[in-house]
Every structure is written in C-alpha cells, then in structure tokens.
Length: 504
Image (cartoon, rainbow, N blue to C red; front, side, top):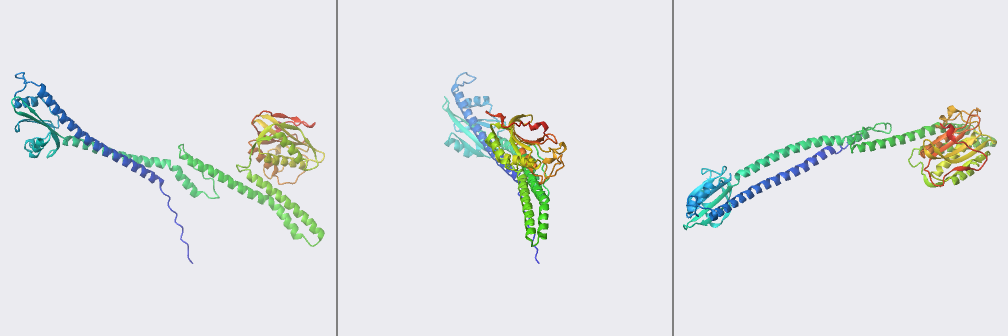
C-alpha cells in the first residue's frame, strides 16, 4: 500500500522584500550616479579653476609690463630683473600657486609661493628639466610632479635693456583635488546612511501597506464553506481598499451560502409532508380501479403542491440576487393595472372590482409587480367567499418615507388580519390566524415573495383594514414625479382608502 506524499504548498513570493529590494536598488543606482557626477564635476571644477588662475596671472603680468613704472624712478622699467622683482613683490599668489621669474634663459630671480604650494624639499621646480623643456616648446600645459598635477603657463616680455623677462605661473591641483575627494567621501557616507535609512523606512512602510494583503491571505487560508464570518480590519489608506473589497466579497459569499442553506432547509421542511403523503398512498394502493383513481388524484394534488412550493422557494432564493428586479423606464401604470385586473379576475369566482387607476408612467419591473399582485389576489381568494368583494387599485401618492410613490393595492371584504399577525404573516412559512378561525392551505411563502419584490424596488408592502371587515394589502414603490401623473380615476363605485392608514 502506497501513501501519496502531501503536496508541498508553494510559499508565496514575499512582496515586502521585493518592494524594499527594488526601492533600495533604485536608490542605490541614483545615489551612485549622483556620487559619480559630483566627483567628476568637482575634479573638473578644480582643473578649470587652476587654468583660470594661471591665465588671470599671465594677463595681470602683461598688463603690469605695459602700464607699470619703477617705483624708484617713476619711469618705465628698463631692467628685466627689476621688473620681475617689483611685480613678484607686489603679487600675492593663490594658495596653490607658485610664481617664478627668469631673466633671459638663466638665473632665477624670485619664487613666490602660495600657502599650499609645495616647498623646495617637496618639489624643486627649477631643477625639473622636463618642465623647462616643455616651457620652451609651448606656452602652457599640464605636468605631473612629485607634488601632484600642476597646471602652468609662461609669458616672455622684452624689456628696454634687451633682456627678456620670463614669468612662469604654476598652479598645483593636488590640494584642491584632496578637498574634492574628501567632499565625495562625505557624500558617499551620507548616501550609505540614506540608503540604510531608506531600507529600514521602506521595510516598515511596505509592511504597513501590505498588511491588508497578508490579512487577506491569512483570512483566505482560514475561511471554509462552513465559516464565512471572518472579516479583516480595514485601515484608512488606499491599499486597505483591498481589504474592504475582500470583506464585501465575503459578505456576498456568506449571503449566498445562507440563501443556499435557507433554500435547502426550507425545501426539506416543506417538501417532507407531500413526499410522505405520496409515499403512504402509493404503498397502500391496490389493484382496485377506484382506489387507484383516488390515489392518483391525491398524488397529483401533492405533486402540484410541491411544484408550487419549489417555484416559490426559487423566487425567494432569487430575491437575494442583484438582478432579481429589472426595472424598465416608462411603464404605463394604467395599462398595467388593466392587465392585472384581467389576470386576477380569472383566479376564482369573486366580485372583482377596480378602484382607482393611476395614470402615468413609472420605472418598475412589470413582471415582478404582476407576480406580487397575483400573490396578493390569491391570498385574498383563500380568505374570502364567492360573494365577497376583491378590489384592485393603483394611485400615485406622497409617501412620508419614499416621497413620490406608486401604491398598488388589493382589498377584500373577508375576515381581515389581526393586528398581532401583521408583521409575522410576511415571514416564510408563516400563517396568520383569521378572526373567523378558518385555516387555509398553502406553504406560507406568497406574502414573503410579495415583500421581497417590494423591497427589491426600494419600497415596502403594508397591510391595513380592521379585523372582521376585510384586509387591505398595498405595495408602495418609490417613483420620481413625472409630467402627466395623476392620482387616479374611479372606475367603480368602490373608493379604496390608502393602505398607509394601517401600515406596519
């Protein structure tokens, strides 16, 4: 004997980790891009500033050689050496600059250093043969030194004594690059902190946002067809709408299961008696033709009764569905009333009459209204005799609860309905206690169907009249006021009072 291994339930994908992972990844890529851009921008800014400082220094020297005078003679400079000495003594180089003056091609006159420029021990510019060769070949450039990258430019000015005054301007970018790198490192540390903080915050926020999803999953695991009472606590955020939708779905499912269970219980309760009667007669049936005829008559009656019960139960089961009532705009109420009178007058020999007939149109389900009025008429037939009057009326009324409304009523001159039974008779399988003490056949579903139809239209059904003088059943349906509506006209001598006078 082999046992089938239990199916391993696949663990659902953790959306929380997925959301946090994507958030952290996107933020990481964004911060990395920012760091790279800032790093490159700062380094480019350093080199651009160094080039600008060198160019500015060269321009200032050229301007000085053209406009400057010797402070001792107050006349233009006649010596290249004197020109360089005076200029360099007056200049205050930038922190990363170094100014070097030459007379001709030999002899260093003066070196002026900025605060962060390398000392002679760190880097001796005058002994850098490679740099000197570059200054001969070009007027500016970049040179790698022991103190880091250096941007330089040189200019040559001819003085009156025939000697050339050569000014070499250099700017070391290493100190500024170090500051830029330090700024980038601080940005990296801040980015790492922001990344960790974003990860923690997104983890917490994602957990709170996805809580309804987890609750839905847990509820779906616990819910069975035997217990649909589980509901999910709903928050006030957008994602909680999922929980609200799930709760509404559970409400519909629970109502559907209740309707199904109610239908099964009602059918079993009400069909048990006719089935027992049919079985008993079939078991006792013999070969005598007369006995067989009696048995078949009883069986046919009970089968008809079962058919009516099933039809009524199906109607009540459908009453819980949203498409139970299908209203149609522009139903002619007067034509509907005439059609109803023709149908109910064929139910049984009674003194059928029509009271008021409403003239106008309304939005309603004519088929369901016909079904409800026929149920009321059949109920009146069961509680009256042939000489009793049964009256049909329809009229537009101003209802205190519904506003403009259509009232369709069936009144009779039978025993009426006791006040104590007027609420109970609309329940399923409920029978009233007539004042005359007579009991009538039926499953007790007709008035329940009438109430379901009225409530499906957004209205209600009421019962009035005084016990012993007759009953007045009225279906009150809300309808918007429209042109051409009238309260009704009297087609007979019977004047039906509005049923709201004794409504429940």
